[in-house]
Image (cartoon, rainbow, N blue to C red; front, side, top):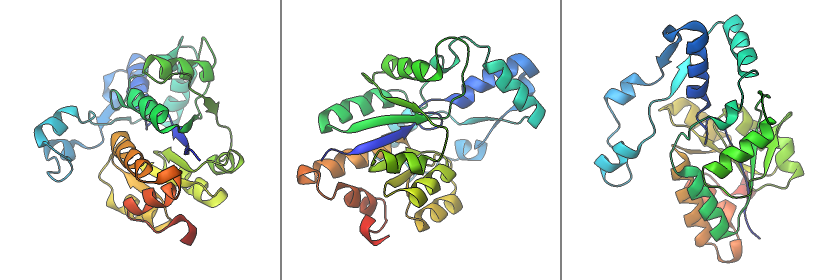
Length: 245
């Protein structure tokens, strides 16, 4: 059986933070932005690159930008986004080329892929259609997108998914609590506490989409006929077999 994998969009593949930052600067000026990991940027972890420290550093995603807004400013920002034509189509990839690579591996390994998102509507096409266009423009052919309203765990259960990849711990917890799917948390920030807590709950942790794809593709190729692939992935991530959790 082919793997059935759900991928979150914003924070995993699409750089929503920078897109929101540009809109926030137009509304409030440039004083609202800050860098989340300046210390890590100044002192990169020498153990993090897989091969070729220079090349890895050059290809690493830029430091994540985040917003420092009051609740009222945030509400105003989202009202503004609703008026922006094609906002969701305008976003950049966090890891350039990751969407295309995902598409190629999924086609080669015959994965069944669905993209999950809670994006609100903006002007122009629906959030679903804009998301589909964005994925196609970045190299994933014929994407399936579902705009989520409830628990991702219940969606994972209803669709009989094997794996859900997300950047929010709460979404991963929901997947573990409400389905038999396994969750993988994309945690680009150096946060050992969050990573340890996630692993204790049976959630795999990776530092990037490309790391996740490396593991999934390698473990899938090593599992004849797809048998035991989920257990192989989780063991590779330092977790127990799915059946024992």
